[in-house]
Amino acid sequence: MTDTQKSATLTLDGESYELPIFSPTAGPDVVDIRKLYAQAGVFTYDPGFTSTASCDSTITYIDGDKGELLHRGYPIDQLAGKSHYLEVCYLLLYGELPTAAQLEDFEVRVTRHTMVHEQMHNFFRGFRRDAHPMATLVGVVGAMSAFYHDSLDVTDPWQREVAAVRLIAKLPTIAAMAYKYSIGQPFVYPRNDLDYAANFLHMCFSVPAEEYHVNPILSRAMDRILTLHADHEQNASTSTVRLASSSGANPFACIAAGIACLWGPAHGGANQACLEMLKEIGTVDRIPEYIERAKDKNDPFRLMGFGHRVYKNTDPRAKVLKQSADEVLELLGVENNPLLQVAKELEQTALNDPYFIEKKLFPNVDFYSGIILEAMGFPTSMFTPIFALSRTVGWISQWKEMIADPQNKIGRPRQLYLGETMRDYTDIEQR
Ligand code: ACO
Image (cartoon, rainbow, N blue to C red):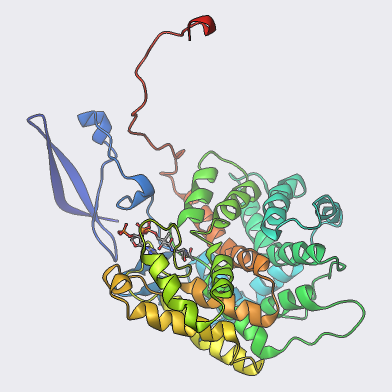
């Protein structure tokens, strides 16, 4: 953060207040309003944080107008093409690409933590069989704080490190267990000879009764989905993790809070909602009807997988996944899948429609991830858990950054109060 020597002047009731302006390494300048209330006695008003920087960060940068996403400066398309998920995890956590030795050490550390405490199995069995895997995930990740007492002290850097590795390592195991439980199959233990993505597919799709070989094209596609979802700066769930952690809450509780936020259909739940929408549309001839509904102000229906708070251009992650979707569907011999036909036609129709052009609504990452996951054999209910497991590293990296920041203080927004002013209590007989 550079002090630009520039300032903004706010004039209020004849008084002027100078507000410092800081320059980021990329992106718009920010006006520092931290002392505004103390000096001028006013708050700022910004529901949904559309113009508010809640923190400074060095992890991820998005230029929504250009459709650019950088992790520690590296463009996402280069990372998705040349790197792999665990290397990107290292980059997000520690700030630099690892050397071969550092990567090996990190992979060993993550791999050693893939199993969950055996007693945790009982937790899963306490859920109803038909529980949504996200419900199970929120509960079980929160419950990790009842199992891993030696990594709860957030003031200890070593414990923070152990918690970070535990979460990255165990989330695939927990997500796969939530899935297996929901379909009545036995839990499958992790296999440390497989890479991160392949191991996850193994835990989801293998059964004790027969051999299961992970197709390398599918594990590469899964790795790409994980990589593309790894972090996305101060989105709703990341901000939730930061806010939860600002009170000093333990890392497992904070990540459980992030998972709960991610679940919503305006955020991580959009991939499930998108596929359900494609199924509802069903055939290409019904697309115009749904496009009209999406444009109708009186209809709550929105085109799921379209639009983004920050991207006002193509989501760079969607570009990579579109290509991945073609590869996976061809491999599986389902390139003529009716759902995909609907998706492709819907995308073209929306991209050429003045409403979507004018509002800069482009397909986001969720538009394609669901198609790939469905082709791999995942039920729609697993789409958001997979998003959650990929995003865990982003949450944890942002959490670590925040805790190490000396400016860290409890998050406590103000409000524009529009309720009743003080009035006297009325006894019940008089109401
Ligand atoms: N379909 C139809 N119209 C839309 C859509 C959509 N998917 N998205 C936005 N619009 C319209 C809104 O109605 C609004 O119109 P108006 O200006 O006439 O009122 C305008 O575009 C701006 O929309 P907002 O909701 O104000 O934009 P915001 O930044 O708050 O919302 C969001 C972004 C939540 C992603 C929104 O585009 C949406 O609901 N999309 C569908 C859900 C989705 O795909 N979410 C995934 C996000 S990516 C992720 O989490 C990984």
